[in-house]
Length: 270
Image (cartoon, rainbow, N blue to C red; front, side, top):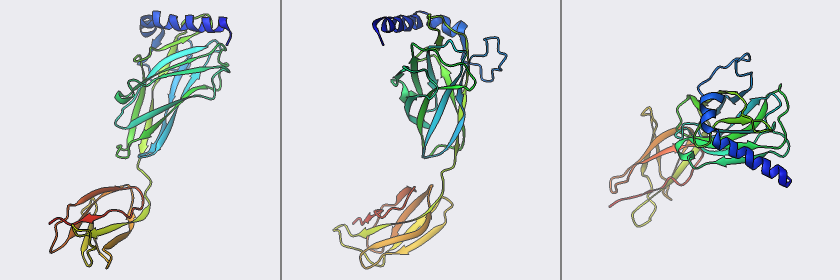
C-alpha cells in the first residue's frame, strides 16, 4: 500500500471512532434478526451463518456480507457463550477484496466477546453470492448441552460500522446466527490400568468396578501383574471406577471417556 493509501486507511479508521455513537443509533440495528431483502436500510446485510457441530470438537462459523459493491471497510463485535464456545480463531474469508487487512481484538474473548476490523482499499464485489468476510473457529465444550447457542453482533469491544471508500457510513442490517450442538459421536474402546500396593507391588485377583451414569456395573479382575481392562466401553460418557480389596482402600476415579486408555491406575491406601 502506498503512502496515500495508508493515510486514507488511517483517516477512515479515525472516522469509525468519531462516529461510533452515530453507528450504534442510526446506521445499524444489532437487534434485527430476520431482516428481509426489501429492508428500508437498502438490503445490505451482514449475516452470521448458522451451523452445527459435535460437542468436544471444533466448529467454524462464517460471517457473510450481502454486498452492494461500495463497501471497503467493516468493523463489528461478536458475542457468544464462553461456557459452550471457546478459543476463537479468526481468519479472513474467501470473499474479501484483494489486499484486505484483518485486525482482531481478543481482549474480552474469555467473557464471550471479540472485536473484528476488515479494511481494504478495494471494494467488495456486488452480491450475489454473499461475500464471506471472516471465519471464526471455536472449540465446542465436551460437556456442552445439545441444542442451539446464539452468536450475536454487539458494539463492544469494537463498534459496528460499514464504510465506503470515501469514509461514508453505509447502513447495514445485522443478522444473528446459531451453532447447534449435537451429541458427540459414540465409539467403543478398551480402557484399563494397573492396581498396586502403596509400595508399588502389583495386586492380583482384585476386583475393579466400572459404573456408568445409569448405575450399570461391570466387573474385572486384575491379573498376576495387577492389570485390569474393560472392552467395548462406550465413549462420550462419564464412568466411576472403584476397587474392592480386603486389605487396602482405594480412592474412586470419575472419568469421562473419549478414547481408549490404559493408565487408569489405582494405588492402595493403608
